[in-house]
Image 1 (cartoon, rainbow, N blue to C red):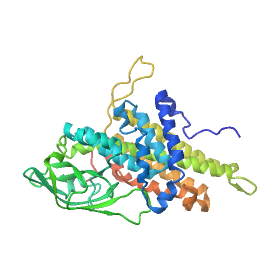
Image 2: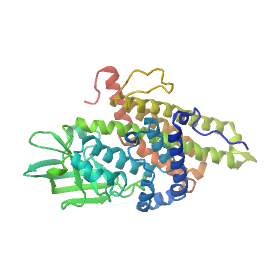
Image 3: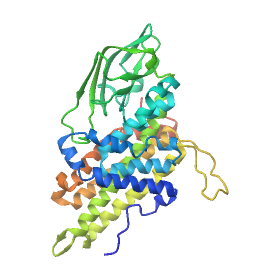
Image 4: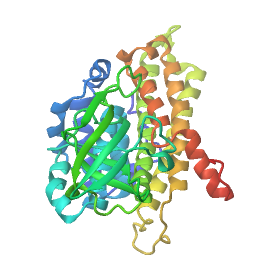
Length: 399
């Protein structure tokens, strides 16, 4: 049989430079050898593969846009990681797209000199502690974790929930409110300080490899040197969350790539009624629907990623698209649209596999379950929809 087309049906990867194509190929080889053969076992056992981190660091993919790679390449890195294992991609995003990016955006020269090289090389790991037990979508106005100045220290009290990497990280970018002023402060919290209690969240049905934690802070004393110097208000978090929301949209692309890979291979190889499943019209229709969803999602994410980083220089060099800048509404539309299409795609993929679609042996059940986390975090579908609605009508339905 001739080589079948890839799910990149419109050739988005053709827009990459030769260097980026080579790097993406290196990443794919790493994922094929070091991740795909083991990812289902990690997921079934709810075990994070810490021994993989030195090998992952050798790829040197931390904050790729800061290294001169294109925004499209940065998005495709997350899509490819998710294609192999959503949990690994989530670890990577929490550490690099939130923790490392926070250091780059808001860290002082001293903080960057102390932590940045080790963080990029995964010699230390980071988390991002914003969500609270009683405050998710409304954490901007309802944050209850407090930070009180006491001489050359800050005293933190409160709780955080759903903190990815939280059980084992060395540092967290942790957000707290100063009661006296109402200002939001960001801290580089040493996770081993007295008064920090971390408990793994058990019994998850998605992202089981990711070590999410409940964090309780009781009179934790953080030195002034670990206050994020560049944070002035809660609005500063939006810079990080907007970029992270876009990258979760790329995760929705990656989940659909994985769905297409698994469902197409199964349809071609599985025989029923004396012929391959792929010979049935309904199966072909479902596969084409998945393909259409992933192509549309990739196109939207490719464009919003360009906007987030200031527009797009025409390859010919003969002109330039007028500079544009991403905003939260555009990020929210991309994330909500792609995650909704992803939910449709993974349901079709699970259906194609029939009963085998509900056991992790065939990968599809894991992809299906992990998609629910992508659909929910970095803003639920409903909240992201209302962010866009507010932007296009000028009327907020959130309050």
